[in-house]
Length: 314
Image (cartoon, rainbow, N blue to C red; front, side, top):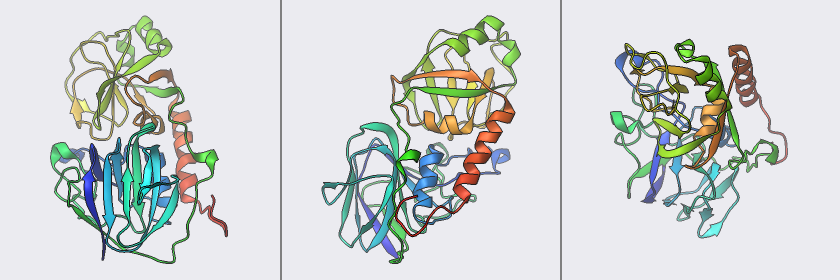
């Protein structure tokens, strides 16, 4: 088995796959890759199963060395990716040899990059997933972010074809973002004026952002009831605490909560939100369940359909 040796772990680099599903009753968070679009491309480029584990690199400052040859993919944020000190393209695959060093330096666009390898990183499976949820100390090598001198095993297939994602499918993380919202359980407990304010306001991403959720800044809104009996929390739920500032809950969210929720952000938009840096502007628009489901079905169908031909590009 070949190995990747971590030389500099960066701000927060974790092993992530599709997440830990079916364990809410045990109080375990879902976890999983924050940007599912970039994550799926990292695996599709390599002909991996779409759920194969990748390294999610947050904001760069990451270095590692290969003990043997391999084929890798790099997608997601532009974190100045380099091989042996030479800056390289992303949203494509690269062949590496024993002793080659890779690095993600400073962020230029977006926050999270994904590093895939043929067959996925072979870390232990815990409750059906390799994903790290640090609050619960589950997944990865020891339940936490990668550390200096950690060793990640992988398998090498010299026959893997080098590929590049068509630029049409590569997102621009600097573009303004409008999040589609399905009205939530407490939608009608917010006044009509507050619902209109919410839908017409441009919010700013605060510096309180992590894998649990993104807190936004803007005109406060409030529901008739400030506290509720705790209930299950879906991915993308927009929780409104007492200060009236919305929080979009993401992959490492708590499983239950008692603050009112005006709605739930569509899963694909929540993934895109995870690439927004503090200070970014976002807006909301209410959407039907049918519209959101249709877009997700098209997304899933696209990634499950073979795309590759004789050339290198999709």
